[in-house]
Image 1 (cartoon, rainbow, N blue to C red):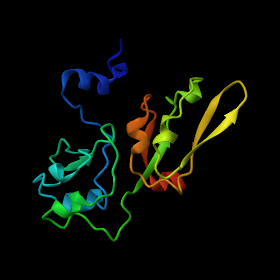
Image 2: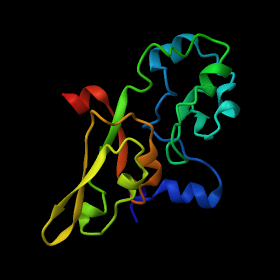
Image 3: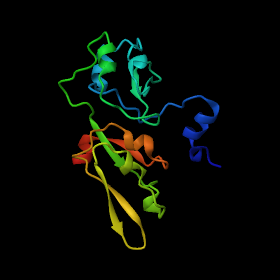
Length: 167
């Protein structure tokens, strides 16, 4: 088996050690620049998050782990932060969800987990002859919460920068 074919997500579950993901997303109301400029890495936002989706990345800065759950936009992370890292005047996230090629429905397997989990109803399913309905994401309705990412059994849902989604 090729090393790149190993599913580190399942392996980390069995070993109890999380494997850092290169696609980590900064907490809501932050951007990588604000984290780099003001975050001290104190970790006050970690225990404040009721969803437990914030973890420190390899550089000691907060990032979201949507494989654990979704962001509820409660603001507890922002309230707990002693530094000017969070700015609630900006959009919560600079990303939306995207459907990757690993999607079960695109491979002929019936699955609607992402649509069932989406609180914004941003994912609907287009019927097709001879196979399961295919998911379609309305990026203008997606709030980036990660509910679909956490729910996807194929790990086909990924965050994508808004510029790429609308461009």
